[in-house]
Length: 255
Image 1: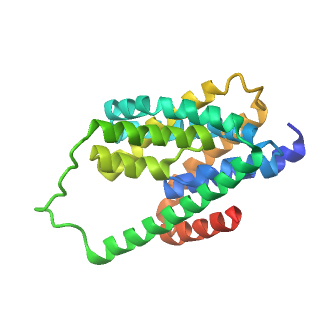
Image 2: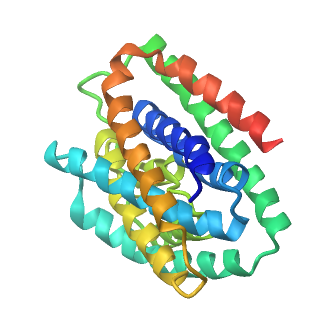
């Protein structure tokens, strides 16, 4: 790892962590573009290396949420295990994909994340503007359908394996919709799912060539530090404005 690459790439890791900590998801999608355009890696190398960054970020967040009791270990472990097949297939397809096709598909993913962030911002604004559901009228928990859970978990694993991203913007709604978890539990449990899928995808790519471990280790540590700082700054930042600005940035980056 050259000093020039380190000076350019490590602040990107810090920025990704800050976004993860402040927004609770979506920031990890910047890992692949940073590794491709700043560190000069190929798309296949970047999607594999990004799994290391995602995994470290998941462990850091999982420790915090676990201590607070916001992780449903059994449900998350089962959901993650069901997604290992999709993660394996996604990793294989990503390694064999044409680099141009892979980056074009990743651009589409960036647009999807941007849209998800904007929709979440609008939904939060309506919720706070219209008020919460009355205490005596709790939401009806969804009926758990095993086939639906398996298909959803496999799709999440496929996303992680193919693109090398955590996919928290998909995992959190999926856990809420198909397992009926409340939002804090879904956010905490999603990190366990992400960790399982990332570990599976990384193990699948073990024979795909050596990774730049010094760069990835430093990158991941900067991401972990940024995530910690982002969590502490959340109360001082306007989350809706930050989410809107980040979504706009992702749209420009995708184009």
